[in-house]
Length: 197
Image (cartoon, rainbow, N blue to C red; front, side, top):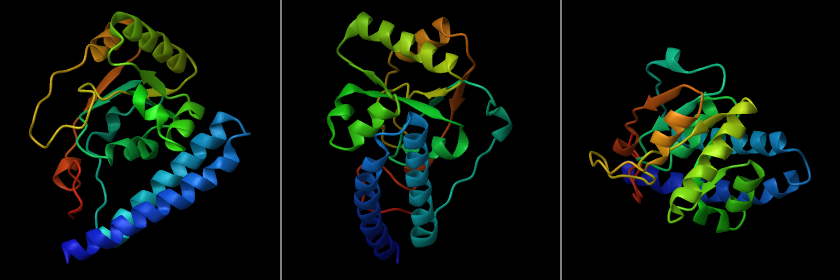
């Protein structure tokens, strides 16, 4: 049954991606907020697919630690799901992402439109300073910033070295930094076809 549900969800996932990502082209002429709303709609659709096809939903423990105003959230990165969830938890989130992702057709265009903070991971101190400047800008606009401190998805139970970005943001941005523990890798692990409930 798990394999069957996973097959159904993967069909849904790619169908939903295709329909919504092409549909979002219509939002380009409009302000960023409208594109952000379209992305939120997309992520809620993924949640519905997981819930009703796979039987998988999410639970938040420590919701009282979410900040009404702008903050920096630093979650562990285990799954593609981690990139969805903050659209359901935080008002107007802004992700820090690796620069290469902006080259992905459609997806990268939307990330630019939503003012994602792109980081050249080989750019050294120059890239780090630009990330801090961009983060300060987003925080000043009332947006929360999401950074995956390890810089990539890690297999369940494996610790990767932290990139210096999170320490720089902690020291140089006048905003709360909230660590976030996830267990998404138990249910939707990296590069896994199977989705568990």
